[in-house]
Image 1 (cartoon, rainbow, N blue to C red):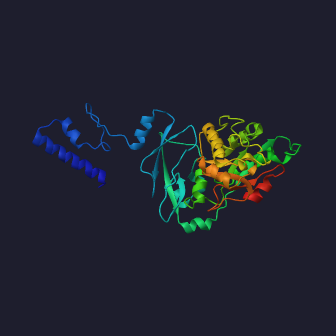
Image 2 (image 1 turned 135 degrees about the vertical axis):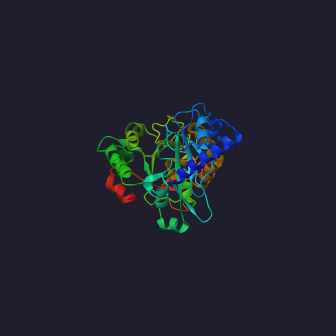
Image 3 (image 1 turned 60 degrees about the vertical axis):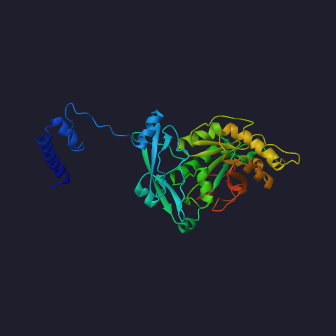
Length: 366
């Protein structure tokens, strides 16, 4: 006999005994013995109030139909749920740490976490999608040896301006203008061939050796927030839903994010011009002056995380100023890839210029 049938028989027997010995009413006996999952409620029965789970309570307290409670499962997973919004991307997902292990990300199922399925890995590049305002994420882990064996070398793509003219623009900045047709082909390649798009906090943890990133990862950035970025490139970013970063000179423009897939980060407040020796202010000013400028930029953008050095100019004093302002990373224009142990205040790039089509991109990032 099935266990459910046994429970029903026991419940009937107990009910009869209670009726005989206590003279209670049928409703009273039912209250004592009924199993909600097996039997329907009777008329007049007082419903049992059950406390909300932590995730349910988090959603209830938020009072927002777009609120979503994220619960975490697996070794090292946070105990408490985290509130997210279904109107945006995941924000601030935790990166747990364990001695002798490397965190390999959050996944949409336990099976995907065990298999390290890149397509099912969830991070700040992904929209929040919940069922009944809740979602569960599963932790994946690798060993330090597995992390080293992956030998991931992360490219940070650097774009500047864009043009709709296949023949490009004229003038000395001609090389800065990527043809939008090439850009669209490149973004299609990234979106459809299995690339992972790390967030900046993930890149930092990867550099420290605390986080595993798949070898097929890429970060997309734009310098200067030129109007052609807004007019030509952002619609492509939006269409393919690719996380990107726009390094903005906040003294020149302070536009709100043009898409939820575009992060605004600092290209300084007002250091994108020459100093006394013809080089950028970043290598002319003191660390305190640099920090003051970056503080002004951070106030506008609401975040301190990563900056892009104007003109790529930097030195030890520049690094001191960046750190003094509370920024963890800085991106150069020096060619190269980010690996475990890379200097966080001298991140290299893969520069994309006019005339570099899809084949050029594939040659550089796979």
